[in-house]
Length: 226
Image 1 (tube, rainbow, N blue to C red):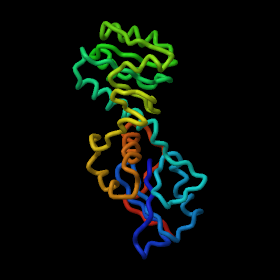
Image 2: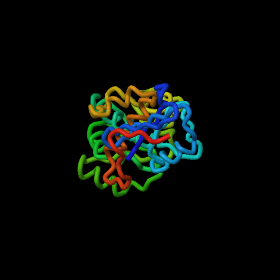
Image 3: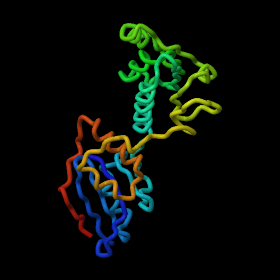
Image 4: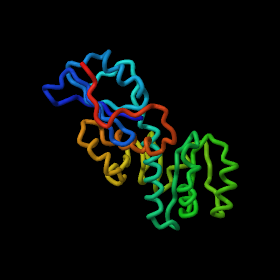
């Protein structure tokens, strides 16, 4: 179970915590007079799996980290962008030190499509290269210095690539295009809250990818006692 936490607007709800469940995401509304102790008790089962709006103090509780999901979604958008270009004229670069993305099937399509692909990674790519060769007949150049990436037409570099003059996906370039990511209809009410849209989309995608959930659900609508 995942949660989003926002302040309550109702004057009569200042001392209440209300919850409304939308699929696997619970919207928790917190009154302005609710103590941190009460809020912590409600949020404790969601540690690491909740987003809080500005003004909600969660202190020692750890919120959801959207960065890995955001990076994966941005990589997908990068790959789809490359596939719209004329492959025989396109040189592509990817910064993926830990090898979190280059094993994705969509990247294999990029390898087959682009004229040249260069990957900066610290991962041993021998097994991946065998797979690329079988699937596409070619293999990207893997390098251990970013200096080899600057001749590319477009580059995926989540932390940015200073001085790169092509189309950059990452810090200093194109950010995640949230409007192009479909959202389940039943979760649309969550977008009227004060939660950052990008973080919320990442939470939703995280929820879609989860295969098991040991935390019991709450009632569809509930009000915690004062």
